[in-house]
Length: 219
Image (cartoon, rainbow, N blue to C red; front, side, top):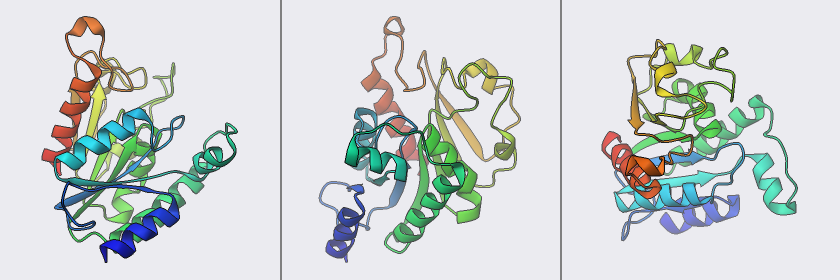
């Protein structure tokens, strides 16, 4: 089954990161990760996160939304697909992966990818939700938060957020009435990409390792 599944992954153009020495689909847990609006599934951020999680025993499947996959083919920059199409892509990917993963299956992603996953987590019946740098509001528009659905979320959720994230800083987010199923884990002095100020004493790699450790423990 592992060989057939990996062939299916390659056919779809996805990336699958498995724990060392473990057959595909047999890890204790799997996380489907979607990319953010402007960076592909194999960005340095996504590569590092997937690698660290695999080392910690979590399988990671990475996929791209249609606009990013097309951009990879022809190099032209495109805006994200309409939300309805982004959500439909999530449904397609989840349905296929669910047939191959016997353990915990979580969904999530970086920024926009995580936000789209959060809109579907309850509908899909995902075991957990993991968001990396959640876009609580658009840049410069904290007066228009995107949190209505987060107040009613029933899925166990972990949001890894930088304290100075321009799309959701700590002072603002702590004023929201989020569901009791949501844990927000704050990284000191970090921005939307979880990168800290140099003066903080932390490195970007430090924060990515901390994030991976927290996600693995959560799952």
